[in-house]
Image: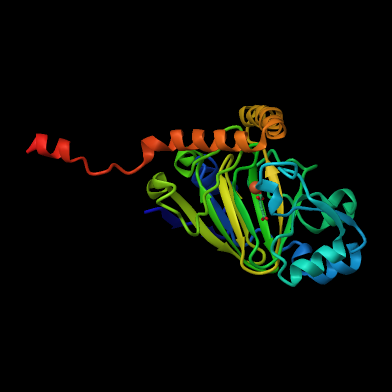
Length: 295
Ligand SMILES: O=C(O)CCC(=O)C(=O)O
Ligand SMILES: [Fe+2]
């Protein structure tokens, strides 16, 4: 059976403790107190964004994002931010705002939060926001640039399931992508037998909590209520920076290129390759021949 441990929840973590207990060993953690002095914590709300930024035009994602074909890995349509918020508030789960750079249009919002001081290397130019309605799911992926991600939760709750990069084969990683097609909340062991041997983490994030997801960690999110998040990213080494740049180039050239040429066939090829890689990790079937020989 898949094993999901609870992510540690810590307050008052010093830089030294964070580095020794979480950053070096590449282990996730939830900071429960890092955002307590942020103006954003009481200022940013559904009504705040509707009233102050409702006129912005935003690029919206739907479930076409992961399907082979023309919508693959791009946003579907543009909407007024106000209309998007009204739809997701009502529980329209297909629409999401993903890697939304609101700060380009609203640089004043940067004064409402601070970059954590528990490590260096924050990419100050790239804070991103994510918005989704109750029931929305973010499929299993890791972040292509290989950054460490510090994701702060606002308003509602979100269930997060994580797997370390070493578990990639067991969750049927699709080559040339940063995706896996498994649904970790309802693991299908018939279809994906190697999932039975996977070990990961889970937690539920509430308002004000910040989760640290180490470099290349797989993550799946389930919005339990309407909520939004702010992701701050940091690069801890030139090696991960280089790997990120290589990833971006190869994924965009190879994956997007073949998706355009032959969407279905390319999808099938990736799926077959994912199965081949997972095979050594499938639970062993009882082998009667071997048993008899040893008796
Ligand atoms: O919270 C979300 O909607 C997705 C977050 C995510 O994938 C990230 O921060 O990298
Ligand atoms: Fe992500």
